[in-house]
Image 1 (cartoon, rainbow, N blue to C red):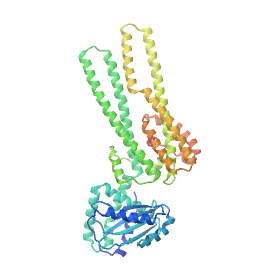
Image 2: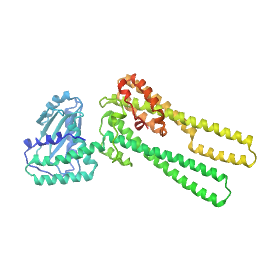
Image 3: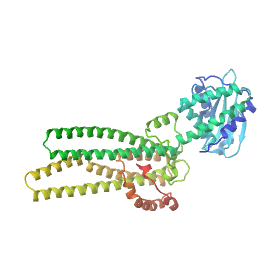
Image 4: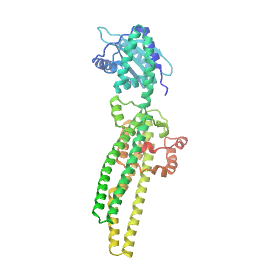
Length: 479
């Protein structure tokens, strides 16, 4: 993955202003407070502008030695306000050091402080600038990985000693480390890697769901086998085997819920990260990544462009279109699950009734008793499988998702109000998590029909016909 080196190139020009001497000082616990106070000053002065202010650089990393300057990233969603922001910053005593106009336009300001207090460096960038994103990503990588931060600190100390009077050589010495970390970060914490985690966790949950059904079936078969035996040792062995299967059933159930919860977490993160384009805090990322227990090191990352058709930029409209697509496919898959479970129940009822009728007509005595015992065993199996309950839950999910679908259409007509979109995202996630997992294989049975109906639906909404034809692989996102 290619990573922009503009952050490194930019730092090389700093020596022209603050000199070439490399001075690293020990971490000061007062730096976060100094940043907070300066942020308040900036917010008061720039209150008429919509902007974001982040603490970046080494002073944002606890226990990291750093140059005596606090780096501040100021992001402007509307770059047309850049000149106004520059004027306001100069009134605060900042000196405009650098102005670059390229694919990553930016301004660089510096303000020295007296009495041994740290100075401030402001990097003014537009929203979604790879320069600003690199600064945030590198900071978050160090915050999330203590070993990586320690390694970076040792590298800085070594370079500072080796190039004590050459700031450019010191900075260039860090370039390879920075670029390598950014490449790994963008792969490990990006949307596509979250998709990979989501797929892996849901796949494991599906396998466990199949295992649970097999255990339930095995228990029913043991019960049926016991009907034909009056031998004490044989019944004891069957009881012991049944006990082991019950333990396996409990373990598989716990693991299935664990992996499904991790997959649900990844799905929610994908919607927020890709839909709104917002970055998660290091604390949230750490918690989220800790929940993933399936290794995806050797797996090919998913691709967000293959999971969703929308090509809008991050914002409420993109998130709405992602939700419209997700709700449509989820509803159709749940509908297919309801039909399959219902057909299974209906068929089973007919077979069960037929067996009872045939037994009463053609059999007598002990034969009928044995058949009835077997039927009772399989009734217990059906009860444990809860076919009726599964059917009703599928139907409830279809009904709830249909309501959300209509609400999304209303939000689309209302030009995507943010509160409505966020509430709908929350309600969609709640509906999916209350629904049963999509029955393994149901996607492949229904894909052709759903793709055809989706093209018709998408044509009436924000998606073009060409985009709708590209729809594939939706099961990964929707479960």
